[in-house]
Image (cartoon, rainbow, N blue to C red; front, side):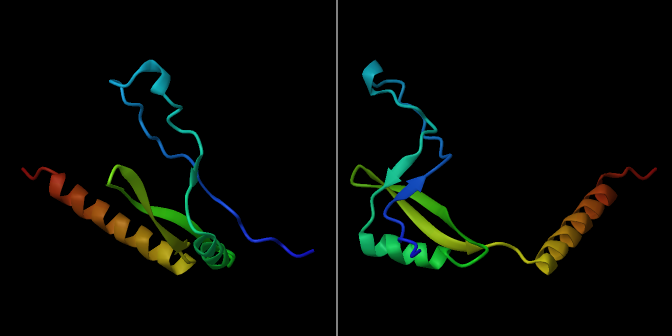
Length: 106
């Protein structure tokens, strides 16, 4: 069976707060899934790039342009095991340095 390409982009788990000064009927659910507007060509391109194992689509920036919210998306790849080990080593070294600086010497 041929897998059809994605036809829409949905943004999940983004908390967009309600505007308190708006009329009561204007309120919305802050964490609801939101459909993103994009050209079909852009959606298929992002879908193809995310089809590889270990890649995902993440929002990099949100900003306003002429009253509309724009979302900058990026395709990201997860860390490899050696990258994780290096991050852990750096984090532990920083923690040891911080402990050494906070100890009182009498």
